[in-house]
Length: 315
Ligand SMILES: NC(=O)c1ccc[n+]([C@@H]2O[C@H](COP(=O)([O-])OP(=O)(O)OC[C@H]3O[C@@H](n4cnc5c(N)ncnc54)[C@H](OP(=O)(O)O)[C@@H]3O)[C@@H](O)[C@H]2O)c1
Image (cartoon, rainbow, N blue to C red):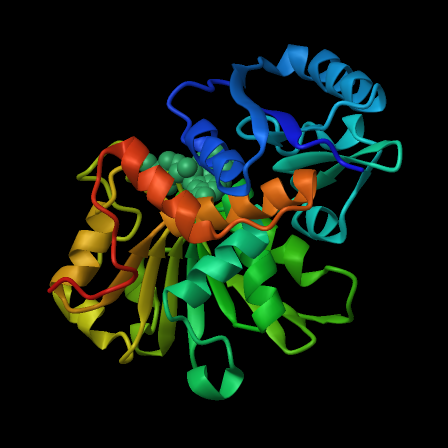
């Protein structure tokens, strides 16, 4: 019989300014549970002891769990007793939970992004996006979550990154995931990276790009920075219905989103992904389903913003 009380944590470094406590408090309230969710600043050297303390708490019968953020998502893997298939495939853990005497790692960023893209109206069915590909910006942890989604849906993907060598290494790694590899083709899914010489946006045929996904930190807290400085004619080459999804949500209307919207391109920001990954983590810990919309509203409240009515063109 589960207790109706959860005490969960965020381990990050730094941990200030996280929206997660607001989201998980809203989740507790929504299901009528008591408990707490605390953001803790855990430097890398302190992570092993902190996870061990969590393991001891859970083993003693407390209902607990943790989210991991930078810089712990990969470093935590050898400190855990096992991983879910999603965490194994992504190669990063953002949710730690207790199951049958083991402290396990899950990745809810990836399915959270998948759900947020569907909310934003992205059509995963191959016949709806025939001839289209995705351009993925960034080659860090968030890009790995995006690759999981794009591979699930079989969307051919081109990775562009500030450091092109990291994009190439990521593409090569994902292309080799457990399948017969021919060049960069895996079971019909292709992932490529622009070479250092060709990384400029001029090298891309934008007419076939149905999804631009920013998984880089460009624009985070810097309203005038963009990872993709396209010209208006380049934006206008995108096919009808193309979507720009920016995982960055601070500010809400990043320069990438503003540039795209100014040319009539649909955009959505990363709060939807944040809300979905939190709902999935909460379900892992408690077995309780929470409406991600409740968490999205809590995030908007915490940021002091009116709720965004989904993906829309803001010409
Ligand atoms: N919405 C959500 O729920 C959610 C979830 C996870 C992450 N995110 C966001 O996603 C972003 C990336 O997170 P992460 O965990 O992948 O971080 P990360 O592992 O540190 O990777 C950062 C990536 O951003 C690139 N980058 C950093 N600054 C840049 C700049 N000024 N211009 C162009 N590229 C730049 C880096 O390029 P180099 O390789 O050249 O260093 C690298 O590819 C963050 O903004 C994070 O807040 C959002």
